Amino acid sequence: MNGGGRVPGSVTTGDTESIFLAMKTARDLEEERREAEGKWEVVIPGTAHPTFLKACHYLSLKAVVVSAGKDGIADPEAMESALIGRMILLVCPAPCFPYGMVDPVPDIARIALKHGLLLHVDACMGGFVLPFLKELGHPQTPCKAGVP
Image (cartoon, rainbow, N blue to C red):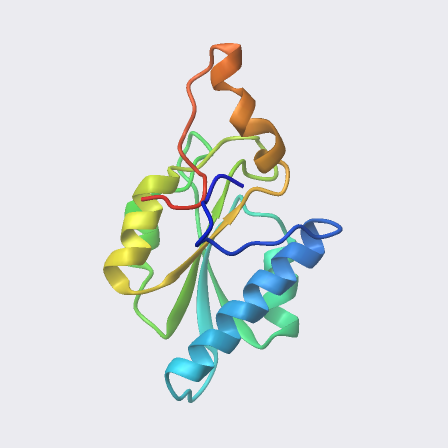
């Protein structure tokens, strides 16, 4: 996954399982770090896979859905503006489910780092496609483990 020996990761049977495991891990880690009253919140671009909403429902997380820009790409400024509650995780599709657009992973990663939040880059399909874009002569948004 291009993250090096110190970056953990796993391969699952599909997107639904991957999303559920990522969301559950984020919730469980945050519960170890600080006490909670009410639901933890997750910032999700409106273009993200619908399973994120399903996972929020089943894991008792609150989904804060942020509209994407007119270009179908997540708006990092809008995502950062949504960080007003008990946030634990930012979601960044690479590419997004409906349009195939790759969100600005480095920008969203910097926001997560700045606020001490976890970041989930959903590269269920992109992880197998995006590494080859450069070889085909297309620009590539950095989205491998280790960004920023």
